[in-house]
Structures are given as C-alpha cells and as structure tokens.
Image (cartoon, rainbow, N blue to C red; front, side):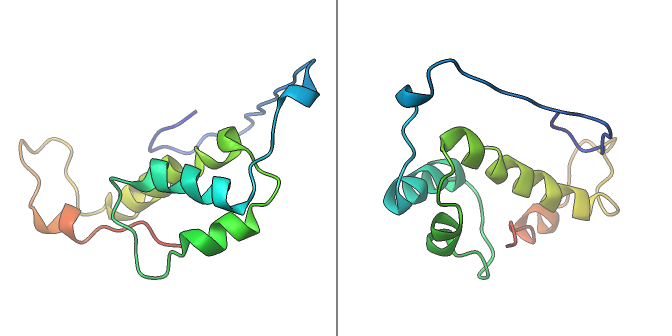
Length: 102
C-alpha cells in the first residue's frame, strides 16, 4: 500500500474482539509516538508536532505511525520531477532541500 505511485480502490479494515485491551494515548502519548516516528525526518517549520498530537486525540499508535512515512513519501513525490532514479548518484542539494511539510 505504500509507495510512490497512487493506488485507487484500496480498503483497509481492522477489527478486534478485545476492544477493552486497546488503550488510547493522551496528548503526551500521541506526541511521543510522533517523535519516535519523525526522529530521523527533516520537518519544515510549519510542522507542529504538539498541535498534531492535540488534533489527533483518540488516535492510537497504529493510526499515527503511518502519517509520518506518508509525509516523507509525499515529500519525495513532490521532487520526482528533478530526481532521475537511473542515476547512480543524486545531487546532494535535492535531499537537502526536502522537508516534510504540514
């Protein structure tokens, strides 16, 4: 489901027969999850993890974790017009100019 090309008509469903065993993190917990998944990402100045944690109340780690690599993939997709995947090396300016935006 991840990748650089868009896909249509994908439905993901998840269920559990033990809903009482799933705890929902508070704002601090959400912020910790976001920090873990963005620790090696360059974030643009408009990204406010504290606001995202506040806005994602009720989400669990499995909801929050995919947001981070999806943001990174979107960042790469935006640069695909200047990246030649057949090149042995990519100009260092390209990855240096990349940052995950809000």
